[in-house]
Structures are given as C-alpha cells and as structure tokens.
Image (cartoon, rainbow, N blue to C red; front, side, top):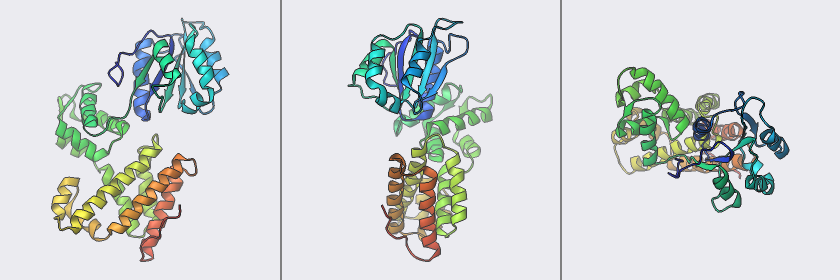
Length: 337
C-alpha cells in the first residue's frame, strides 16, 4: 500500500515514482520499495544518479544494459523533478515500453496525477506517494513509527509532547524515536517523562535562544546558535527557515496574549517552557518587531526557493539586520525586497 492507501504494484520491472517533498520520507519509502522488489538483482545494489546532473542517455543506458550477475539493474534518479521536466517526452516514450533489463526509480517532490507520465508509471510500475503528515496525522504517524520499526508503544499525548519538543520534521522525530527506544530498553512504552529526559533541550528553545541573542544585539552568538539549529536539518533547507518562522509566530501569538493580560505562567505551560524565561522574552520584544521578523523570514524563504540566495546566507542577513538594530537601540528598518 502506498501513502494514499492505494495498492502499489511490486513486479520489480518497469518504472516507479516515489513522490513527496520530504527527503526522509522519500528515502524511507525507497528502502521499503527496494525490499519489496529486490534491491539490486545484479549483485551490486542499485545505481544512484543525481537528477540535476544526470543525462537521459546515461540513465537509460544503465537501465537497458543487461546485468551480468542477475536478472535486472535498478537505477534510482534522486531529486528528479528537473530531470523529469527536461526529459518528459522521452520519459513518456520510455515508460510506454520500459526495458525488461532494468527498473527505473524516480524520486521527486511532485508529479501531478493528471499527467500522461503519471498514468504511464502507474500502469508500468507504480506510484508511491509519501507526503509529510501534518497536524493530527503527524501524531498518528509518530505512534505508528514508534511501533514499527522500534517495537514501542507511545500514547498520543506523549507523541504530541515529542512533536512540541522537536517540530514537524519526520526525519528528526525518527532519529529521536531511535534514541528513545534504546533508552527505555526492554520496557514496552515510551512515556512523556522519557521524552523530557532524552530529547533534552527543546528544538524550539534552541530557536528561541537565537532570537534571545538577537534581542541582546549579539550577532556572533545568534549566528553560532543558528548553526546548531541548522545542523539538525540540513537535508531540508526550506523546512529549516519554516521552523524558525514557526517559532517566531508562536512567540508573536504569545506576545499578543500577554499584551492582552494573559498570565505568563499559563502561556508557558502551553508552550512547554519556563515561565520566567518566557516573561523575559515577551517583555523585551514588541509585536511590531516580531511581525517584521516574520516578513523578513518570508522574504528569505522566497529568495532561497527562487535561487537568489542560500539558507545560510539568507538567515545570516536576517540575524545581522535584527541583532544590529537591537544593538543600536532601534527597531529594524523595513526589509528591502
């Protein structure tokens, strides 16, 4: 079954597409698919090529070359969106009559269901959809993931606590589940207390530490702390900026409630943080500053997605702007687009 609940063919020949914008989930689905079709029948395992640099001729030559040690080759094109766009007509032609000598696997962010290529791949192999779960679906995913492959039970409130600690990155959550499973040992259940002890400093707290350093006007410390956050999720650049923006939005929501008279202790319980620390953060910033940070992060995200910047450069500019404004005793100027 694929992520849509549809049966996926597993004959081991033809063309498959694994579709989803989360790199961890794509590679997890790839490992499952390779297990089901046999991961490298030629004795050497699959051949991996990068979609942004591979030529169609190179890929199809690999797929069409008979294996000397097995019945077929397996060729995996990673980050295949541009590869597909550049070679769509030729890929459609190949998918109509795929070579019996090999299996072609395309890993991509998206593939519209109404395209001819999607329909051909669905007929000649299979489509595995692996969109990142959100909201309640992510909690259910954590519960399932704890059970398989780690063999542990985790109640929904504990799963929610893990999400609060770590954010919405499936890859990072999975790595923490592995640590938690080892921590509890023979015990069957992962509890909230286990999560509090093993996950240590919250991801959101790490992000808030960045904003604290910015509020202090300490550019070097803010950049150093950001590097620690960024190092945990380098496989997903867009998600790194989105995580920072999510934390700023949470702080803005708390600031709005605080300014309306909501007690800091009540807000801290909701955000799983220390009341005194949260009060200090809320007292030293303004709603206007936080909204400006949101706008700048949106601009940074757009710059990265359009190829006009990289994550590290965009965030460094963001930090320098807001920390420098603080050190000068003024609010940041409007961001230049």
